[in-house]
Structure formats: structure tokens, C-alpha cells
Image: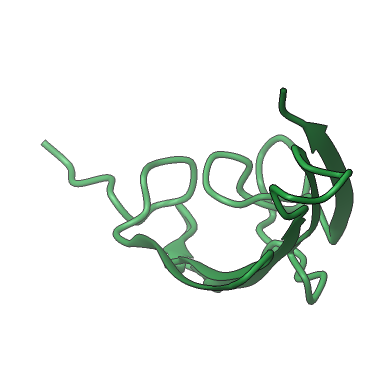
Length: 115
């Protein structure tokens, strides 16, 4: 049998996510670093690895305020807008869709209310 790990369109050898968070009073923050190991194309060509950074900042209203129960969260996925590494795939899409994410920087604001 052939070991297909680490070849395009098959599982990567290493996919990792490291996170760190901080909280103080009504504020909290999170930073995550995502890593996907490089691969080999079926032709033997190297496909680079991909590292992206995600961030999130939240503000929770104090329980003794008129805004109690409200929380606002601002998030940025792929903060540095890192594109997936190029791979001349048979599907002609320019990256390995099985292992890499093509979505660039994505910004969101979520507001919630708890009763």
C-alpha cells in the first residue's frame, strides 16, 4: 500500500491551532494561530504551508448596568489575509481545497442579549 499522507488532496501530516486568551473586567480577547503543514503534489512538486491568525475582542456589559445581558464580540478571521498556497490542481482551482482555506480576511461583529 502507498502512504498518501502529505500528498495533495489527502490529509496533511500536521494541522495545529494554538490559542491564547485574556480577560479583565468586562473585556476579553483571544488570539489564535493556525498552521497547516506543506504538502507534495502528485508530481512531486512542493506545496507551501499556510499560517493564519484569528483574533477576537469581546465586551460584556456589567450585571449592575442597564445594559446587563448584552455582549458585543468583534472578530477577524485570517487577520493578515493570507491566501492558500498555489497548487496546480486537476480541478483547475489553484489550491488544494481538501486542506487549505481560500477565505481571506473575514470581519464580523456579533451582538447578543441574554435574559
